[in-house]
Image 1 (tube, helix red, strand yellow):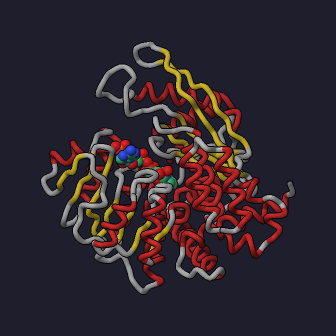
Image 2 (cartoon, helix red, strand yellow; image 1 turned 180 degrees about the vertical axis):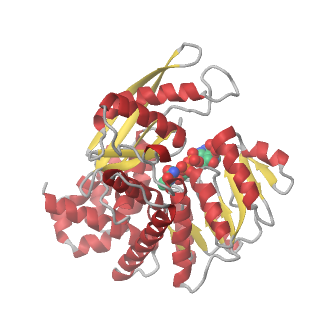
Image 3 (cartoon, protein in one colour; image 1 turned 60 degrees about the vertical axis):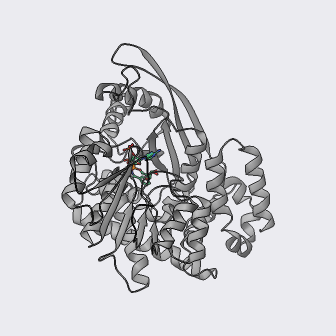
Amino acid sequence: MNKYIANVLADVKAKNADQPEFLQAVEEVLTTLAPVIEANPAYQANAILERIVEPERTIIFRVPWIDDKGIVRVNRGYRVQFNSAIGPYKGGLRFDPSVNLSVLKFLGFEQVFKNSLTTLPMGGGKGGSDFNPKVSPHTPGKRCSDREVMRFCQSFMTELFRHIGADTDVPAGDMNVGGREIGYLFGQYRKIANEFTGVLTGKGLSFGGSLVRPEATGYGDVYFAANMLAMRGDTLEGKRCVVSGSGNVATYAAEKLMQLGAKVLTLSDRSGAIYAKDGITPKMLKDVMRLKTVARGELADFAKKTKAVKFFKGANSWQLADKVDCAFPCARQNELNGKDAAYLLKHGCTLVGEGANMPSTPDAIAAFAKAKIMFSPGKASNAGGVATSGLEMSQNSERLSWTAEEVDTKLKGIMKAIHDNAWNAAEKYGHKGDYVMGANIAGFTKVADAMLAQGI
Ligand code: NDP
């Protein structure tokens, strides 16, 4: 390994020994940068790597709120403002009990390179809380009520508002933060800051949201896959696809796959996975979307009412189908391991398009690389969501809204540009077809050059 990279990695490990997800993300990026570091000595001379692995600012705060029984609850809130060299911090908020500094630093670090790849002027950040909207603090088997979620969001924003702004830091949704939560957060920001600006993205259409933002991450993931296939003169038509998750990214990826003539065989959630050997139908998918965003239920309940799918309790999507062409991990980090990768490869998989952030473990990525299949890392193929957030920011600044066709056309263009940038960077440094290296180098170079230009 390049000595400079090895030294920086050793230092990051020593300083962040208790942050495994962050270390995994840093190692994945740094170990692919040797060609560009060696070709540009100014990066080492100006300590670009040492600086790029350290967030510019990390904010941790108390979030007290009152539940429906009148009991005071306290959660921990975070915002990691990782890098603003090329634009205001931009990145989602995640509400989940698994949220901690390691998870948010990994997500913020990834976001820096992802946002750079979108071709738009956005820095990287991430935030959230260990608040769990899916579990009521007082009634076993129930979720938090809408009012509890609202009170939590209001308290969270009462602290966060002083650290964000349309030209400073623009949060969006992530896991368990959808339209409902963004609405409550925006309402509280507007009230206490006394201004109506594009400070959050993923807003409702009636208050500054962009058409196609909800669909953008999933659609973008599939557009990226279509671009990879096009390099081999192929399309998604007739491909047998396994998708994990059943949230925002997964369901819109599934929808776009169906529109492009592919068969979607699986979806999953915390309760397990559903498998339809002849493909999930558009009607079933709509029912899943309603279940997840309105009724807020589990796939286990859906499977009880739907004869055409088989339910596998506690399973993920990877080892259910006996013939697979493409896999789209769209649920969470480290959800596809080496064993899953071996199964997918054995059963014909030639394309993996990551929709989630860091869903494949390092041994799974190594197996895909060894088999030389098409593999797109999340920071490239799930960048459509943040790119469309960037488009929402532009519309808010101009005080106008574009049509769905306009936004979708721009999204397609951005996904093609990201694909081509990653492809060209990998080719330039002698690793043709390696989208992991290509995306890392292309994303890194723009940020590193901006940091160089702006001094230490
Ligand atoms: P959602 O909360 O809408 O969906 C997440 C899905 O993953 C749900 O189906 C959830 O199941 C499942 N899941 C979560 N944790 C587990 C677990 N421990 N075991 C099994 N299943 C689990 O989130 P999004 O769709 O927004 O995000 C999914 C991924 O995509 C994340 O990695 C996120 O960071 C990434 N991403 C999202 C973007 C966006 O625009 N939303 C943009 C770029 C990346 P259940 O329904 O049971 O909770």
